[in-house]
Every structure is written in C-alpha cells, then in structure tokens.
Amino acid sequence: MKRFSRPVVASATFLLLALGGQACEEFEYSPYEVRLEEDEKDINKRNIANIEALALSPEDTLRFVLTADVQGFYEENEAMVKHIRQRHDIDFLLMGGDLTDFGLVKEFRLIHQDFKTLGIPYVAVIGNHDAVNNGQEAFTAMYGDYNTSFAVGNSKFILLNTNYIEFKKQVPDLDWLEQELAASAAYENVFVLSHIPPQNYEFGEEKSARYYKLISDYKVRYSLHGHNHSFDYYFPYDGTVPYVQTAAAEDREYLVFTVIGDNVTFERVTF
Image (cartoon, rainbow, N blue to C red; front, side, top):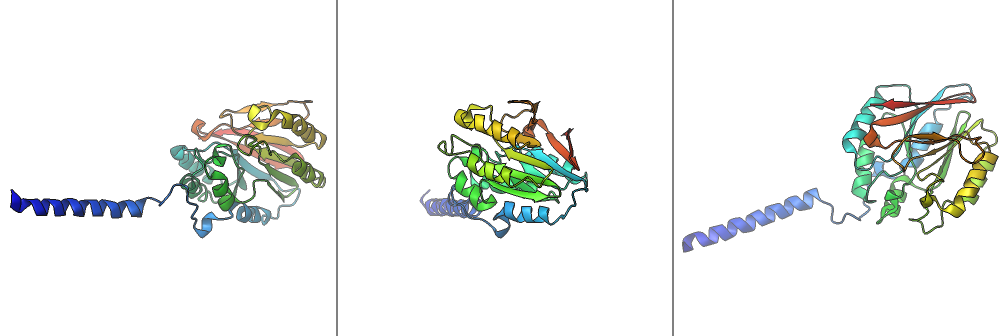
C-alpha cells in the first residue's frame, strides 16, 4: 500500500491544479469587476451615432422595435434577434430596461453578445434590476448616461431613468426631462422611454403627477415603458397621450412602431 501512496497524492495534487487552472480560465476574478472589451464600452453613444447617420428626411418611413425585460431569457432573446434580423425593415431597437437580474457585468455582456448581432443599432435605458449591486457602475461603463436623447427624421427620442427606489428617490430627473421636451418643438413626434411607468409606486408618487403633466403639456406622441412584464395600452391623466407597456422577452413578443410623417402606429409581433 505504501508504494502507491505518493502517486495517489501526486495525482490528486495534479487534479486540483488542473481544476484550478481551468477555473481561472472560465471564471472572472469577481462577478462585480467591471472589465470590458472595447466593443462593450459606450454602446448607446456609438449606436445613437449610427442611428443619426441614417439621415432620414421627415417624409421617410421610420420603423423601430420596442422590447424590455430581457433578463435571463437567453433562449428567447436569441430567437427574438433572429426574428428581427429576418424582417429587413427595422431601423433600430429600443431596449426598455432590465437587461439583467442582478446588475452583473457577466449578464450585461451576455445580453450585448446577442443584441449586437441584430444588424441594426440598439439603445438601452436602465432598469431597476440593472441598478442593483454594482449595476449602476456597469451600466454607465457599457451604455453611458442614464438620461440621454437623440433625433432621427422628424422624431425625437428621450430616454429617462425612472428607477426611483434604486437611486434613493433622486430620479426621475423631471427638470432635465422638461428641458429636453422644451427643446423638441421642431419635431413632429416625441417619444419618451423609461423602464418603470408612472402608475407604479416604484416611480415615486410625488414624481408621477408632474410626469403626467409634462407628457401631456408637451404633446408627447407616446410614453413607452417596460417593467410589468405584460403588454398594456392606455390613456391616463387627461387621456390625450397613449402610454404603451411592452411584454417581457419570455412572452416571445415585441412591438414594432412605424412612423410616417405625424402618423405613428404600432403592432404586436410574436416569434
């Protein structure tokens, strides 16, 4: 028995070293570490530049996708991307938040690996799940500012952080939103996209009344949202502006908006 003891120990040591080496290759040193490749940085900024480079005239047809709450639904996301790629009539995609469950870089990276293959630009707003752990740092590193806007053709798009609880009741920044809306008078269509809709308590009750008023006063074309994992289409406040809530990726559905002049329609698409 003694003559076999050393080889057994050696074999066990070799196995541990091999497994240790394999683990180092396959796993990050920390799930909270924000270490990115170049194509994973400033995604919104780069994709907004690509959208604006479309140089559409006000008479041209603009068509975009709205989806949200893609966290963890990797099989459905892959199918969605494949389905959108086959259409050949979409200009860009809006991601309405909750790219992740736990705000981890690994999750953000997996989502980007799918959606960067769309063949069209995509732009994301932060969701409440994206803002937990060190997700705020990760989102900023990958996607940029929490609040941003861009314009293409005769349409202006405003992306607003409405994750009231995760940002210690300091958002949404409605002063910034009003400045953006006031500067949008030249556009026939203004869309405001955020993750949490104003009827949810997580939006902040003291914030929702002013949000509703701003959206109506400035005649926003659509207020767009995710978060509740179900489709909804409704006219709150004074009934003048439609609010649209898109389903989660697990429902295998996304929305396609078509803009022709000042006429805006949308369709629910299943895949």
